[in-house]
Image (cartoon, rainbow, N blue to C red; front, side, top):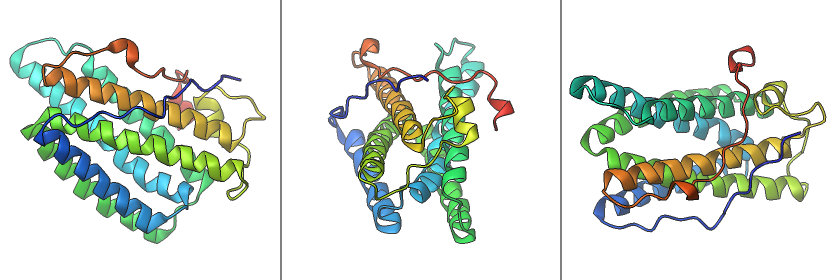
Length: 229
């Protein structure tokens, strides 16, 4: 069974200007809303938040693709990276649907939140791709915190640590004895990777130095996810 990569919980990108502060403030508002609405129902929180988390990668990949076509230039690998991010977040969603069955009300909330967030993020990316990637970086910082708290709930017995869903075992190449805790560890590692990638994209767009060696490692994923989805 694969071991979850180490996740540095201390990583935080300090705001360097007005756009970074706006990105952080926007993320904190989303965090406050999630805490108020879901409290410690982390499985249900994950379902709603992962539907939102899967949006930025697809928006960024689409607009980067169109920009490269217009300018007839290379994408430097950004499109594939962002598409992988969107696909990865979707698999998180498919996993947690098996863990915490969403109610009809939560499905309606997802429908509303996703449309609002998609339109807002699409507009933001058109106006400032740097700010958009910084928002995602901060969003993923909060995701790492949320999944760390989820792990504490599992470890202290306040949330049931049942068997890992079949879709998760396939996607992360886990054994038949894998548990939900194993899955949460890997999801957290995914989020840490997305955190560092998006902060590095924002830094590159801002003309700041980028340390690619500092990017959190990415867990190993199945190549044939369509069979699991």
